[in-house]
Amino acid sequence: MKNAFVLMACSVAMMATSCNNLTGTGKGTDSTAYASSSENDANAIIGYTNSVVDLLNHDMDYLDQMSRYVTQVDKALHNPGDRFAFLSISTPFSMPRIKAFNDKNDPAHPSSALAKEDQAFFKAHMAAYTEASGKLETFRKEEADYLKAEDYKDDKSVKGLALLDSIRNYAGIMIDEKTAVMKRINTVADAAEAVALKDSPLRQPIHDMKADMAAVKAFVSGMGQHADDYKTFADSAQTGYSSLEQAQTAHAAANSDNVKKADKDSQYKNFYDKYHDFLLRAKKIMRDAGDAGKLTDSQLEDLDNDYESMITAYNSFTS
Image 1: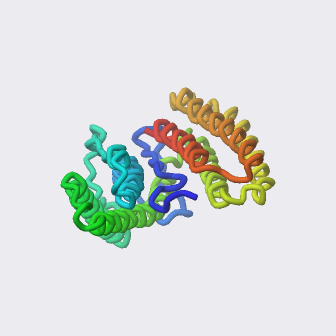
Image 2 (image 1 turned 60 degrees about the horizontal axis):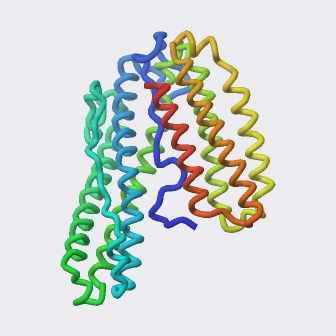
Image 3 (image 1 turned 30 degrees about the horizontal axis):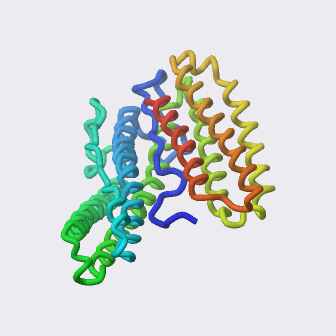
């Protein structure tokens, strides 16, 4: 269904929680790889991983714009006589990344609080990600010059299409590197977070919210995988939806004392309001898809967007 360039479900990533934002002074748990880390080291690890997540989140909107740009340019170059196709091309635009005022971390230089193996991993993969990002932009600018000069009239679009292949290639590398980095961050940040949250009143609420987001992500992924044959997935979708609905109802009403103690009750409510909005959207889409027998790209993007709103609300809760 969707262009492989486009990220499905989780183009926005979750940030971990530092105990600087909370109460409690845990020293770690035996179940994590960083169980013996000090609280300061745990906070340093979380600070670094959050900085990486912030960078990756910032770049995702640009990659989404780039996906649309590539599709539009590809269509125009295959139909060079259609002047309107060139006029309708939307040039990608990336807003400058504004770091939080207290973020002193550089994604290119991992925290020394990380294990040596993790330091080497993040250094190598963030370098590869940054290199791919730079090359993508180089080819994007070359493509823009090619279109502006209308060189496709001289070579029958050959170079322009080759440049698009290069853009796709480096966008794919960025997405692959992002996936690898986020997988490692999930492990490392969860371990550090266990230290930071050991005695925090927000430990259980955060556990519930993360479980809810994982369940929603799995639901959205399943919908995407069965977009073209939805009728074969409809019963499973309904079962999954019912489970999500039950969790939303239970968790929205739980943890009230703990979130009030940490002065996070309004952010907690906002998260579960976003979850409720997701369920309303999903219910409508499931009904429409049941009638049509398939899901559209627009419906999948709507589910993605509502899921991303949940993650944004979670990041606000943990900030």
